[in-house]
Image 1 (cartoon, rainbow, N blue to C red):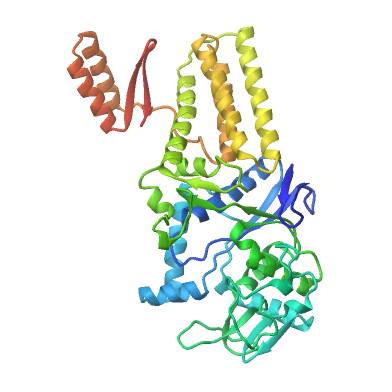
Image 2: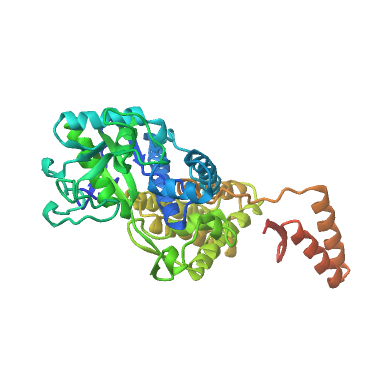
Length: 464
């Protein structure tokens, strides 16, 4: 398997630090609100990587943090007139609602910044003792000029850096790029005791401390959105390696941005959508399918047109699965049926090759569509006939879909007494050529969430 390492700007063969074991940290949300569609891409993409690593035989320890104290948390809690903890608890619960809907597997650990203050202080003290930090009036800053490797991840040169995103301008600092490890207490803000006085941690130090606590001083994979590469991940590298003298991360992975109708998503443009907004129009599974329909490092455009394409694409695959459930032939497969199965196994091998190529989910999904083409050819040519063959194909599609976190929905309708009675009544109506009654019964089935479809071989039932 090859992964694109943001540190080296190349695809590298994935070789974990320990055989068959992977230690992976993904930057989680700042829980001041429900997460948006851009956040969702990060969670879905790296959940898919985790699923594929497990599928490939690795034992993965996966950590994703919650940032539950920072300026956004404080400002939002003041706006809602609740405590920062109440805001965090509320939005962490909301996170799990959407994450489970998107089939994101729960992390092995979900550390929170506020529950790891002790670890954060210990790490800052190590950095300070090694000569890479300085204290001013209760604030502790990382000294970027003391760390010769600063900028190696983002390719920023220290001399060219200006105070920017999440780097507050402060004339007391030695360098504009120096960043806060500890912030002195301000009136009305949550605070904790420390060797430098009461205060709270800076944003960047939280992830380093929590990663080291659960995964050790050097880990295999650290992932996050492209927007985190600088300054957040750059600062993580600097502070972590200054503390330990060891490489912090072997493989850095970043997913691309999401645009909305070809414009950058932002609240000021009115094109900012939480996942909860989108799920009013589309299912969680359709959203996940959409998020995996492009190579993860590429920017992706979010629009109604593309969501409809995702909805239709997913429906086509489910249609093939449903059609396979109606095959009821027995006996030994014909040579033509065996050839179909052989072709499908080649598609499976292609799927694995594409996933091994830097998690190329776009082409992996195309491989599933190649399986669907084989299924449709087999059905239309009366080649796929046996239940054993049908069961094999269903299992393969489900197996590959499970890696992507899709295609696990119901494909056979549970025939309740009510549905059975309506089906029998509709069949009698059709035999009597009472098409008005037949259509009315079909509409009643729709109200129950079931579509009755007539074919040359009889009727089929599927969930709407």
